[in-house]
Image (cartoon, rainbow, N blue to C red; front, top):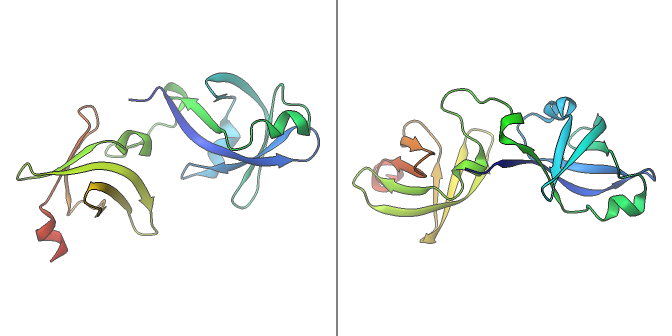
Length: 163
């Protein structure tokens, strides 16, 4: 499992004093208020302050003090260490841990690896690109088991739930 988890992507500068506009990659944007430190390219940075907008976050990071400094970080990801990440309830997983898991059906037919997790209003969808494209709704009726340690997800056969 990854040691660091992405919580946001820097999409632009904000103002002239080095503030960063961040697109959150978390379910709850309010979590940014609790951030004391983040990692950018593996380098630890202290968070000075945070301001929440409707769907974006403005962060002031120690050592980024001008617009010229800030523009160098555009498109980079903000990460937190796994130890500092929010504690998930039983049966919930970080997207970073799901991506790359092998998906098999209960007949042990390999369907491919999770390429991405698509968020929808009702449920997540696991996207497999190869060997053939497949979208798997992340529902208890379809997912039989998830073993993140062994990187394996077992689902009901596709014919059963697509009928």
